[in-house]
Image 1 (tube, rainbow, N blue to C red):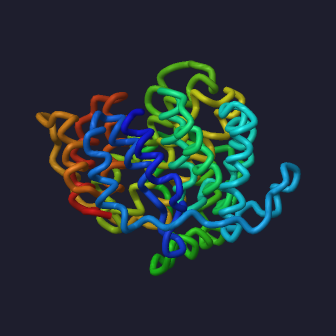
Image 2: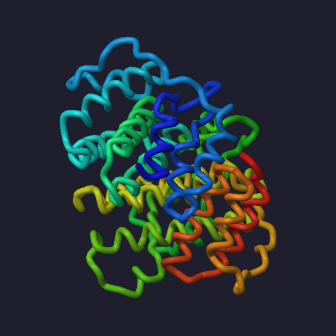
Amino acid sequence: MSELDEAYQRVRLSGPERDGWLSNHAPMAVEALTWHGHGEAVHRWLDGYADRLADRPRGIAPIAADEWRDPLGDPVRTGDWLDYFDRELADEPWRQVLARWWPRLLPGIAAGATHGVIRVGHAVRALLDQQTAPRIGELGNGLAYWAARWQPLAPPGAGPYLATDPRTALDAVPPVPDQRYGVRARLAQLADLPGWPAVAGAVPHSEEHVRETTADEDAVPVRLAGIVHAAVVRHGTHGYANPVMLIHAATAPNAVLRTLPALPATLWADSLAAAWAATAAVTAAYAPTTGRPAPPAAPDVDPAEVMQHAVDSAGPHAIKFADAALDAYATTSDTTVLAASLLATEQTGRW
């Protein structure tokens, strides 16, 4: 059994949250560790994270296959959702379950401060690498968490919108007026934010997409990668305001990007739009109005050092952000993302 499967087995009886709204980052962090060649650190990392794990919640009443709408977004039914997806994945191939539930869950991409989709994205990458029972079980846990915390964002406008690059689009996102409280209070303000419909509807184009004349469907991964890259770079200048929460502006669209290969292409366009909405929402909720100077470029940094720095910090957010930064670096060779990741690791510490 691989280190990742062993880790999934260790945390399989833990719940998706603790203390109400704090997400269980263990399954996501250990997947990123093993993906980047740090399998030897997995069990030591889990030992240090053990006091942040809560027991898996018990169910109240089984959810019938044709009665899923009513308990959607009800965290009290988390145990029922966990049991539901255990049954779903025991009866059908995981790709079929994912394809059926992805469009149902996608409108609620804000679930758990986007941790629902992020956890699913890590599980899908693991399954695309190797299909095992623990990985299928982890996909079910991720889908259940997303369903239990399902939370839609304020709707975007109808356009038409001018094409813009991802960084310009992020800079145009207006902040919510009151950033004193938690994620639910901040996201609730999007509905009354005058600029929200325009920024949420104007899904940006990457420079590659502007230059090339590819079909929209084929361009979705390129456009998503551009959003991830822009969010990683912008964290280096704006992440200081709330370094932990702003990490999700990059990790949420990256989760969608790594899920695309397991989805029917007919779902890609909606996935892109939802991923951008999530990035814009996190930015509106937590980003400051002014940025700081970008961290010094890191032309001589070995990308492996970036993940090692995050591993040494033991912080799950640092590990997940380094994972996204290395994905962005792989597609762009832009060392700015490495510098942003090194700074984020310092900012987030063990969180």
